[in-house]
Amino acid sequence: MVTIRRETPDDAEAIARVHVHGWQAGYAGFMPDEVLRRLNVTAWAQRRRDLGTADPEHPFTTLVTEVDGQLSGFTTFGPYRNNQDRGDLDPRYGEVVAMYVEPAHWGDGTARQLLVAALAGLAGRSWTEYRLWVLEDNLRARRFYERAGLSPDGERSTYPVPLAGGLPPVGLVELRYTGRLDG
Image 1 (cartoon, rainbow, N blue to C red):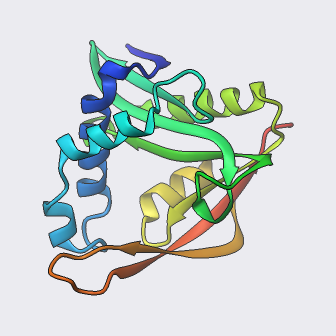
Image 2 (spheres, rainbow, N blue to C red):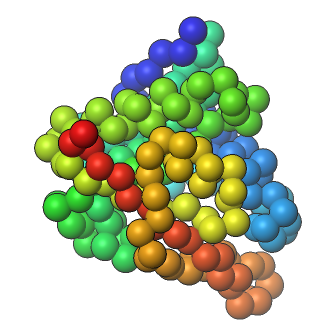
């Protein structure tokens, strides 16, 4: 049975693990292998702690799923980030900032339950339209969002992926998807 609850400070390591595993499995084949190999759960967990994502006053909310007491996924949502900048928020729109599920739970309904919970959270904050960014090459995620009623709105961005050794970053194309919460 899947349970959904709000993130607590003690969840940072487990959320980071799901995040890293999600990147490694979901982005294999189009994200540089060296980037996926060097992902560090401990560093990502510390980044979450530094951002204070579990703080109830944080502008973004993170919900987690658990299956048999083990964290299996998470989603983060809140106000839309202009230029994907957490310091430049547009209160007119909601945004699903992140959604990752442990690969062992892909296809079992966990992602759908997370999205439904995130949309309820956005609607509860009075947004009627929401947005999210997805890597263009992430066909699995794009199909998921399209089945959920979202569609690309024509906006594109480039996500710079830093490489080791002073090499210039690799730019991966992201597409913005939009959806409505009022009907």
